[in-house]
Length: 342
Image 1 (tube, rainbow, N blue to C red):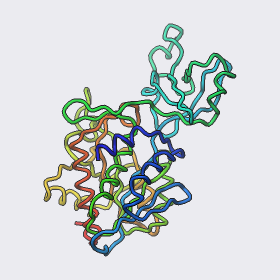
Image 2 (cartoon, rainbow, N blue to C red; image 1 turned 135 degrees about the horizontal axis):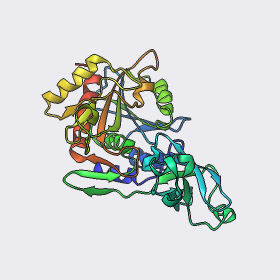
Image 3 (cartoon, helix red, strand yellow; image 1 turned 45 degrees about the vertical axis):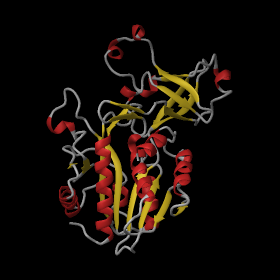
Image 4 (spheres, rainbow, N blue to C red; image 1 turned 60 degrees about the vertical axis):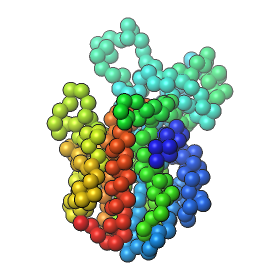
């Protein structure tokens, strides 16, 4: 699963530009299960199990990552851009990025500090005050390799450090994709659907299409979520903590989760010695928000990986939490296939 995650995180694919991620996933599943690509670009796979399921279960994870898109090429060759998905400008400045199909390297810059005045000296610059420097001498030089509408991705290595930590871009949500690839590699007890989704970061658009076409009875959304267990943050503000296992939420900003499914997940985890925790702050959202409202209502749960510095070039996750998420996802899928919630 870690090998899959590394390879996936090193692929570029902002929302709407998931082509290379999709190609990689297809290359890994094409001889192991049935699959199709819907008009949105979702990959919908069916892995046959040893037994036919009583209820249709769909696991989902999104292929896209946050990033930027080029909006204007200045006369001096610098690029103006805007965000694709939720990216805080505080984690933008100074990043190395990759621009367009040609993989042009650039650096995100802003006005020099000695030229700033008033609030500019003490606050992070907004995105419209930043630019990408690709080393072009002027607009004509930049236009040789860049077009308006080109995608912009964080340029970030996959690094192991500390005891169990991993640093990479796009852990949200290539991790969920890695879980599903590992499950497809394995012998499953029941027939199971897997949805590799597009455009989550810009409004859970692929999820709506997939839920409509698959029409599952149960859905398990595999995600990454904010872990704020860092310096100067205490108590509930930490949201969730690395090393404490899979995160199962009771509520976020797009879903109020089924209470029986929430309690059932905790019981299942504890009965099988799997580390599990919940979020201590109601925040964020994911594809569950679109899925649970589809087709007259779908029983939906989210299993999330605690991720520090999410939506940045340097997201950090813990290998032990990854293991907990995988083990819980497998057991939940088996239970739901048998119509067992708790």
